[in-house]
Length: 87
Image 1 (tube, rainbow, N blue to C red):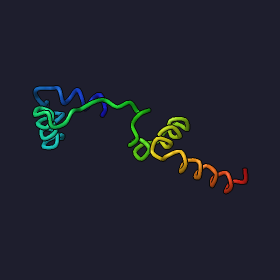
Image 2: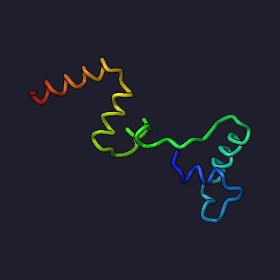
Image 3: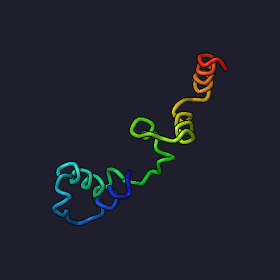
Image 4: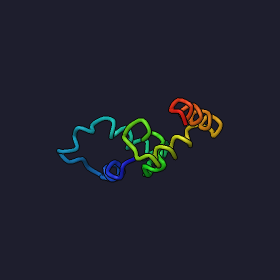
């Protein structure tokens, strides 16, 4: 979760520029208040969802991809790519 979102969650009031957050914000805030969920910041280097939501550098992309796939699958994919490109 982005640090800005964590900060907004901690605020006791909502300013005019934040009104677009609306119902979802208050719902999440109630879930936190009652201990149903816990919000924590996740670094981009640890966030598997970043694979599908933003462009990543080669090293981070490879690291997250390896975490999503078991090593056997990863090796099969890499072998297939190497065969495809003639390595």
